[in-house]
Length: 492
Image (cartoon, rainbow, N blue to C red; front, side, top):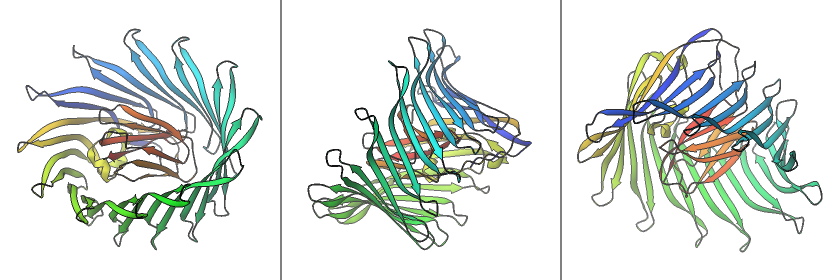
């Protein structure tokens, strides 16, 4: 949820500096910078990325622009790159959004920059319909035909709900050019328990030759008495054996106040037809419910026992901020933990997090693994170190700069709950947007800030992470009336 309080004096994040020590002198050298601008509501209107050239000048290389309507809903998002030959900004991608009186996105048009015409070129369009209670009922996607200069149907999805407004069926169609009609492609069917929790989702496709539906995968869920998810399992249907074959399963345990204290994930053994342990995470908390430790184990199939793999220990200051985190790997030869790195954080405790206006994407540290609430006050500096030859070596430093902003405008509510699992990920990673589906855009960045994935989805997306190099990544999800959701994922 995003909320704006009328006539509130806030602190806005103006810029972030990124630096590292010079390998020869040890002096900190800042080579990257991000600058942000806002409107009177505190919404980001411009993000510009800079790098330092050989003459010590900041040179912009990428920027993003946002526009909003009178109600504060996002109506446009454009991305540009700096062309050194033309000495000018060149368009990369643009989206235009139409929003109804209830804040629902009813149309989205995507453009790419045409270098030949030096202008924006239409690429695709997405139109959405909603019920009277705000539930999405129809999605239609179009592609722009450059020859005829018209929109052409590609796919559409119809959504059905039960009396409790739970999504029960999602039917997807493709446009059949020969018949000039919509043809069934696939469908998802959901089953809920008496409390309204999703317990089964089945996915089917329609055989074009026979006209018969064939179920190809399913997901199962289980919950405890408090409604917390205790099990998730993903299966595929094996047409050769006519049996369900497991893809991934996780089980979770919670303490008395609902904190997840253990998460175990499993792989499928095709020979035995059973789930086998792959890894688990054990999480510790302080009395305020903040994570102070996380230990990851791997299952050793040869010895049939859990083996240490990775560990993080965190300390929290008197203001509730994480002040440092230390990371360890397990040495299998000497059977001891060895330090691999640490992070240190500096704050201005005169300002709490509710006093600050900023996109979360730029608070980019390893602590994203432990949630987005690792800081309770204004973050000024984050340092990352690696440990080598019994010495701490600074690797990256980030500094944050703020100024006052007078916020005005009415409250804007952005409902929606995002689930990202499993995290850490080995082979696949799922993004699930609970609540009302939207047209969403997912971007994933590596630790160099480079975009490694850019995809659109509505409510659910599965990506293959086994092709990604192991490491830390940041994701950003945006939509027509979704200001921004960001987070961190680890690929192993």
